Structure formats: C-alpha cells, structure tokens
Image (cartoon, rainbow, N blue to C red; front, side, top):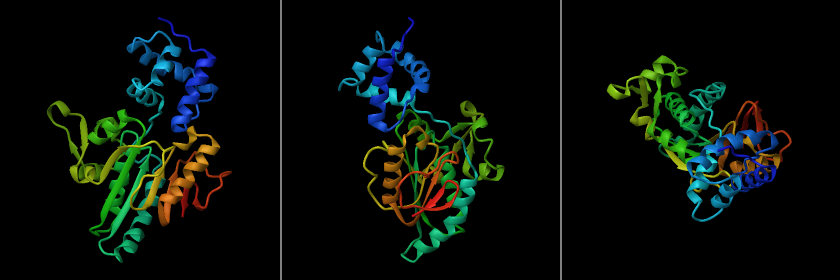
Length: 273
C-alpha cells in the first residue's frame, strides 16, 4: 500500500505535535514524518494519514499518540558527547559540593532534560562521582524524556560494545559490568551508578518538575527542534528550577541569543543563574 501524505494532513500533524510538545516540524520535515509514520499506519491497519490523525486525537488513541511522538522524536546521543561539557562539569562539581556541605551532608542535584537512551545522564553521574573528590555527597540525577521507548532502554543501562567506545578504559572498568553468556558483547552500567539516576517521562512544555532546585541542568540539542517562542519559555522555566548560582548547559549548536532571559553567559553553550 502506497501512502500519500497530503500537505493538509502534514500541517494538521505538525500543529498537533507542536501544541503537545513544542517540536516544530517545518516543511523540510515532511518526508521524515511520512517515513516514520507510514510504519505506524501499516502496523495499525489504518487506511490513510487522515485516518491515523483522527484516531490519535481520540481518548482511545492515547497510547498510539505517545507512540507517534516517540517515532517523531530524534534520539541521537552517545557517552561523553560534546565532552567539553563534561570537563566543565568536572570543574564546577567540587565547588558545588563544598558549598552545599555547609548545610550538612554535601548534596548535588542535576537534571538531564531530553535524556534519550541514557548515555547523557549516566555520563553526568560518572563525572559527578569522579569529581566529588572523595566527598560522600548525596548525588541525584533526574533524567527525563518524552519518549517512553528510549526511557525503557535507558533504565536498563545495557549497551552494545560499539556504544561504549567513547568511554575512557579506566572509567569503563570502574563503572560498567562486562556482559557474559547471552549478553556477551554488551556492557551494563553498575548498580551504584544506576541508583543515582531516576528516569521519568516528562514533556518539556508542561509546568516545571516540582521538588528541590537543581544545581545543574543539561538540555542539549533539544531546543533546535523548537521555535524561538518555545525556546524562550523553556529557558525561563529552567531558570526558575535552578538554585542560585546553578548552571544550564545547552548544545554546542544552540544559543540563547535573541531570547529574553536572566542567565549570565559564561562560555559557548554554558550559562549561570
């Protein structure tokens, strides 16, 4: 069955996705939408894109709507991706730990917003553990994504050998278990690292996550899918969730230029409250 995605159907799908999660599917994304949703349409025995669109808007189609967002979300990630950010994190962690130690047990709260399959928050955890300089700090990382599919993989913490090649050998030995038997050729993040990270489904367009303020927020290579209005709202919500002196990391290809915000610029893609 050859499926045709008409311009009117693409516009409806684009508006629906934008209103739900802020992802801006411009005209150049039409073929991507067609390719990724055609599979969902065939597997669900829908007659057309119009039929599929009508279904995901119903209460009965809630699960399929989530699957649609999963399909349209791009989840490119790797361990120590844009490693300059983790070098910067390793420099600021000791000071954050020292400052919080004056209030009792040192604590550190981080948020990986758009965590994909888990490589980013696990790298944040490893960096924090390595940088705490022996302090018995209470380190907690919230890792969120809108995709239930990637969150399931992330929580398992299991990766094929080619996905861990970017991890320095000493850290790989220290923080990963080597798979045996059916899991040969795979590595699993050790329990003490997995216990630091909590994975939750969260839509960045929703009100901020409640709880203690964060010391560091990573939201990298996510805002490139949003328009300026959506970016500005998100950045200011992040500002409200950071502790005084907290840090925001965005992708190297991203910038807050042109947005109204209260962050202090430190260096490319790194800002402070």
